[in-house]
Image 1: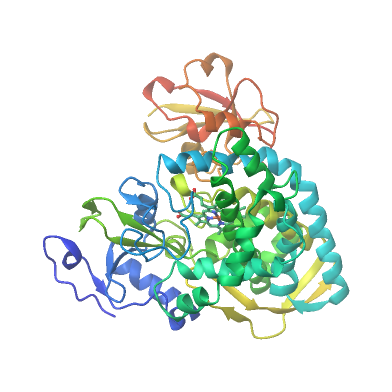
Image 2 (image 1 turned 120 degrees about the vertical axis):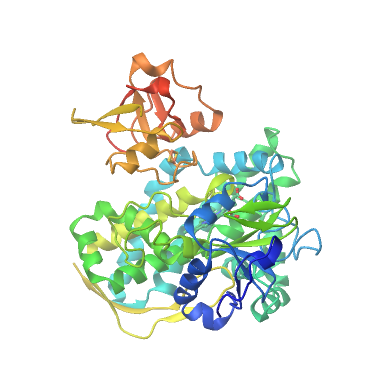
Length: 406
Length: 107
Ligand code: HEM
Ligand code: FES
């Protein structure tokens, strides 16, 4: 695991080589020591296991995210290079696109998920969070993943999109395939894709205009086709982006926040004392746990990055989670502090591809944590938390808890 | 080092030293100013770095892009003709002495 690279002029030889596999089960179980090793090895490293460059320090992750002309997304934001391999599904028109194509589709989703739209859905999202807490208070002991982190987004997001009631059980499994597929051809990815056909069929069907209720995010995307902003064939694929990225991410985000607040009772107490900290408590959980751990870019030309020369057509793996705990950028990076100034974290990315659903995620997180803090005195972990393994997403499979009413 | 004055809703003000090239939002957060949240880190995606620019300075600021204009429609405190996103105000020597008011709320 030590750096074996001898300095040379250019290419992989000029950077430290690490034999780390950041998509291995042992790594997922405890990524933090390896994140540190990656950061300390150098500003740019090379991972021999998958033949990719890696960046784990905040400065370089931020730099790569903010230079989309050099570090492109259209060749895939997973390990697979779309120039050399056929993508497992038709590429995303936003996530896996570069300007100018990206600029157009991005404008559409930005409009559909704008701050103005958030004001319209806020009361509904908040009421559903209260109802969720009612149900949890009846139970007292429950699984904070299934009964809270999954149940809450499932109670609002599919409706906000305008999805039919039938078939929603495909949503989380579909997202799980999508995020596993960004990884290397390991067992997680291969099995996910092998079992994806029914989920893909469901999603393709739901993206069609006739299947989306009027007034929902999905219908609003299709309406943009009438305006001429996108074509009628592009609309379903943009709806697919929300189905892929809009649910499992917030499940893991809310799960992360609840896991943090249950583990750090003094932070829970601060939130109880001042529930207006809820929004920042959620944001800090996104920094601290980084539900989306990594994304790749592909170089469009030879480029020098912090002294390392990277050739054209190379994959660069960005460790968002490691950047979010880089001591060069953050004070006490390994502590969860709900009053931290979180602005600048890269848990939602940065630059032109920065999460277009970030306002939805924050709204869900804020209203859910507010409802919990107002009505629950104590959250105790009563059993061993179980981790859920995914090539990109970090989160739990189960978190048994018991709550005490306020 | 151009300086900007941020006036809080309660009338108190903070004069902040800035560096050319950074944004007014960055200067504010670097000084730990409450009242600018900047949840998106300056990517013009969140509208939580809203400010009201002093009338006398308004015309001297760079024109607003479409995305800023659209985001300002969704600010938590009311949009006024003087509303701008502070992350989109790049500091230049000409902006020395800029005065902006902070809104009641950012979310
Ligand atoms: C805590 C929850 C979430 C996290 C941590 C998260 C994280 C991210 C990250 C890191 C990116 C950047 C991808 C890149 O740079 O290649 C991204 C992009 C994206 N996210 Fe999210 N996300 C979350 C919630 C959501 C929600 C709720 C939606 C939809 C309603 C959404 C839709 C998208 C889309 C469509 C993109 C692609 C944007 C582009 O390429 O311009 N995300 N997200
Ligand atoms: S910091 Fe988000 S819009 Fe200015």
